[in-house]
Amino acid sequence: MPGPPAVRDLSPHHAHPAPGSDPQLRFAGLAGAAQSIAIAIGGPLVGAMTDRYGHRSVGVAAAIANFAAWAALLGASHGSRAGMFATAALVGLTQPQVGPLVRVLWSRLVQSRNEHHLLSPALSYEASADELSFVAGPAFVGLLASVSPLAPAVATMALLAASTLPFALVYAHRTTHEQPSGRQERPYLPRRPLAVMFLAMVAMGAIFGAVQTAVTVYAGTIDKPGAAGLVYAEFGIGSALAGAACAWLPQKFSLRARYVSFAAILCAGMVILFIGGQLVSLPAAVALASFTVAPYMISLYALTERLAPAEREAGAMTILCAGGPLGTAAGQALSGSLADTHGVDGALLVALIVAAAALLIALTAFLADRQRNIWIIDTAPVTRPVVQERSEHAQNIH
Image (cartoon, rainbow, N blue to C red):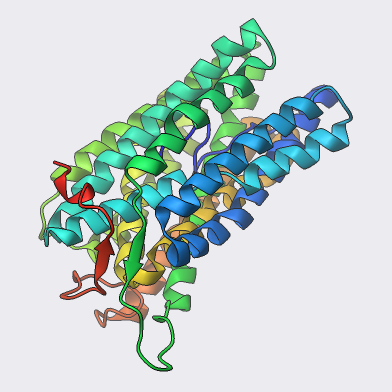
């Protein structure tokens, strides 16, 4: 289900306010953090309901609920800050889980055609589109905000009504799974491997938060606050290009090897960002580091798809993506605190440390698995529980 371009599963929604900023910006940062945490709480709930009741039913309900939450936020903008804070959290809690559920639909589409090798290219192109929309979204919001402070919220509501709801009705068809016989329980969702993927995504979110804080502080130091959006847009553009390139990776490059390799490359990218930001320039360092982001995230999506049974796939994917907003809020808070005393270098240090932790998680999972397909499931499943579509439309999509 497509969503508002300014909303993204794995990106910060608000930069940490620069030192000395006014109370309004600080309140916006707190409200943004509350929204991120609410997204992380609501996402797995939406995923669990999707597994039980189907994509169409939950997709439509989530779109309507989020539309109502945005309307409440508009109404609260004329009232107290407490009301705005509560409705901002409600917007996050009801956010349609666009990215996770679209990735589940990709998985089911390639499985229905027995072409599982096409999933990685599909996820690569989907991640690139996600990154490009993230770049375009803030620019679009900035233009609308120059017209009216309420214009971005009104535009978001229009997008919900004109795209998310129709998409849920037309493409996200209700699905039913083969029901277990007798007292057989629902398929088991491997908790520890999923926890590894969740922590890996938390690290990615923290990197997003730290980098956004760094570029915000940098723009303040050069006395050009508007430059922050342009510099951070580099992060999305480079990541989008790298994500598209992942579609051309050879099949012999296994998911296990990709995960560890891309975690190492991500860590190297943050080293370049930390050192390059000091010795060369932050915009140049951001441009180089951006190419290390999408490949790492795509590997997490693919690995989560492998470890989850079909009946629990939406829940697993939304749990994975819930790590992004949580990491973002933590990364913004920690990097903002260090930026108050150490400036840009303090914020970038957080990104470097978190990237090193992400590499350590990948290496630990790799060594613990020992090619047993327990922690890192590398082989495509021979059979998956049958998913019956109540409409043949999805099978006719080319």
